[in-house]
Image 1 (cartoon, rainbow over the protein chains, first blue to last red):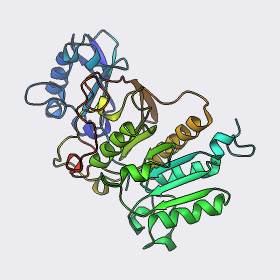
Image 2 (tube, each protein chain N blue to C red):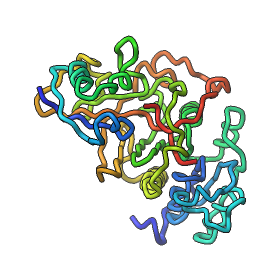
Image 3 (spheres, each protein chain N blue to C red):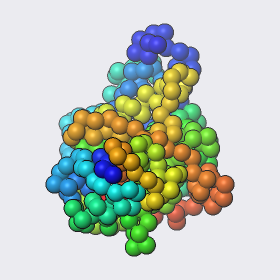
Image 4 (cartoon, helix red, strand yellow):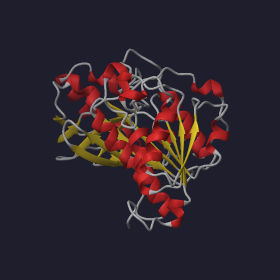
Length: 93
Length: 254
């Protein structure tokens, strides 16, 4: 399944600056692995050593938080939109 | 709804909004509150104006360099709207003074910079039952949402624990597009005015994101988490403990 993945600005250094990329996978976990194969280094930013999504990163499929669906096993369908949203703590002093 | 001219609704005229941090977010937020006629605006900041602040902190001008930010901001706000009250808190918000500072206000705007303070403000707002507008900005990216304590998603529902510091750039190193701060700060002021006026739909249970590089506003749905340590079913945070907020200041955790 091919999904459109929205990349937040802090991670665009892994995607050559691209704001959105296409990735394949039947689940969010498979999608992340596919992104990692094309953009090495990005998975470590998204997932911890145990392979779980880091707690200061949220991933949404069609605007719904995967933590309330099935985490990395959340299914992805053709044409879905996946958004990666990190916590942002800046406020510009 | 005419919030820029009279008649301003009584609930707005008598409303009290606290702006924590009079920097990139807090400056445009406080400005917009003053123009909307919010009766009392509280300003919290212990910093002094520096030259490097001016590209984004729109209440401070070149002659203000060296002046306290709350005094600088109060001057401009009172020139724009002499009929409102501006209360200055020339101190940094911390676990020990939060309850006293928050007490008099109806709505809190988080315009601060840094992980620990943002979690502190979220926790304080929920524990003291004060509605809150949260926002964060870095480089070209911003996000915002509104918290109605124990009714809608809070910051800890989204991010249960603040991350530990790593090697990421600080805000000063990363830089911020000045107009981005204006965009998000204005969203925060609108939330406060809507809340006071009892009109419209608040930015609750939705996280609004703005990507200035792509010129895209988006939103994702968020939900109160049953596992939230602050407002979930097993609450482990029931008071503000200073040791919980001793973290490095970071712009983004990625």
